Amino acid sequence: MGKKSTTVKIYGKNYSLVFDGDEDHFNEVVDYLNEKMDNISKSAKVVDSIKVAVLAALKITDEYLTLKKNVDKVQHLDNEKAEMLIKLIDSNVEELRNC
Image 1 (cartoon, rainbow, N blue to C red):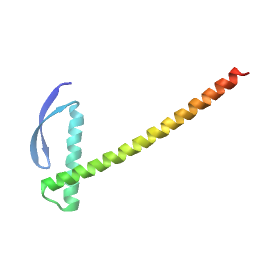
Image 2: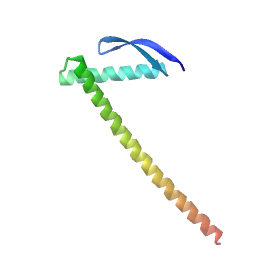
Image 3: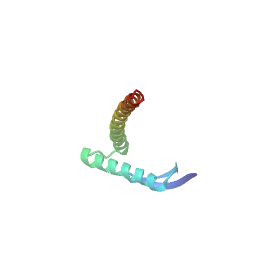
Image 4: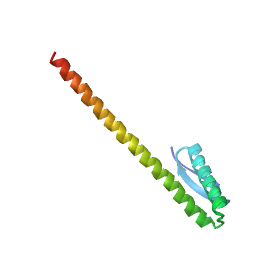
């Protein structure tokens, strides 16, 4: 896929951006960012767009890192389970060889 350019509205301002990849995904990212910025603006009663953007970046980074830690935990558990299964299979194969 080649690079595409588009104009999007983020927190009421138009931005001309270039992106690489799926346009639907890109639009989903923009929508998600707008949603976060709107929620922060309303809940924190912050109007300054730079402060709202920084708070949104912090919130999104927190969400990302939390999800990443959860994925890492699941992968670690999957690796442990795989190792246990391999040991169990090896043990059974060795037992069958000795019969």
